[in-house]
Image (cartoon, rainbow, N blue to C red; front, side, top):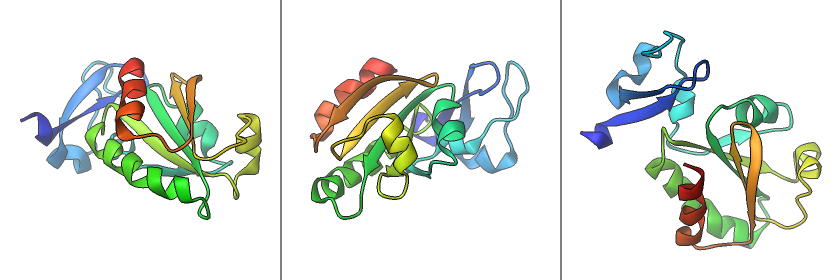
Length: 149
């Protein structure tokens, strides 16, 4: 049963809503305040963000967000990418995963002093709460995920 549902945090009131996956296209609303719920918050894959969308998609998101800062030429980034994809599926509805190409989005990279990639930035309620630098194994990343849930 739990695999057939997803939890979406309401962007308006912060209430957690359990939604059947097959009903995501029905424009679900929050059970508490009736605000529309975004199925995008329940993505089961990382969302590409840019300098233009970073504020809205990461800082403006009320829940937890993991931002993977990477570049296409980076070998360690390509090693971490499939792990992030897998974690996005496993934590869909609980944590939003996003990817930022540091070569194409230097303003946001500079804002968070990204000097080495891959770098994972962990946000909760729009606030940076931690960062991990380097190609870490899935278990190390999951320790950090559990701490922000």
